Length: 213
Ligand SMILES: Nc1ncnc2c1ncn2[C@@H]1O[C@H](COP(=O)(O)OP(=O)(O)OP(=O)(O)O)[C@@H](O)[C@H]1O
Ligand SMILES: [Mg+2]
Image (cartoon, rainbow, N blue to C red; front, side, top):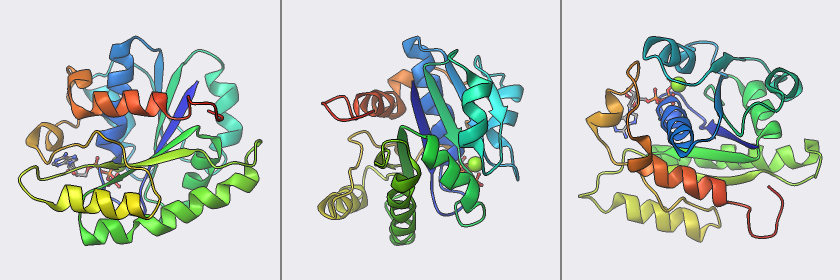
């Protein structure tokens, strides 16, 4: 089972939008998927599911022991679970718990100086999680560039800076667009045909080459 946590240090960094589209893409592939809303302040993923409605369940679990609770609640019904995390700065315990349970961590960020500045604490938390995981290894992780202005150089510049520092960046990147800005609360159509579809496939393939998943 793929269990991906969508994480960033701060609020307003495309976590909920990305969780929704990634889950929708995996659903379109034919996988049984489930969303987990770890952000108790907003419960935006759960409300999106109810309002749209989205054709897969979302469980609200804004707690710091979701790595203990979720296995029993989810059982073996799902092949992909996506956790919409709260801002790590506000709810570090919940994010740490999600990272502890996740097979994959997706760090959403726009190619800007402030977003880049938020990356290091997230990488530190991923690194620290290793000692609490059964295999003593961190989960697979990668940056997903979002709100990329395709007409500017910033996407490529930040991709190079992050990759040179040794952090993987998904090949797929999400443009700045009203398609995503206005998506919340509505059905998600053809997610597989968006960059999120490519990102979902990359995530599924991460860790398939011999190391643990
Ligand atoms: N690719 C995009 N282009 C333009 N706007 C976007 C894009 N993706 C998301 N947005 C907008 O950016 C804002 C933040 O997105 P989102 O709510 O997904 O972030 P979040 O990290 O979950 O925020 P919070 O921490 O408040 O829950 C929203 O207004 C959303 O509509
Ligand atoms: Mg959110």
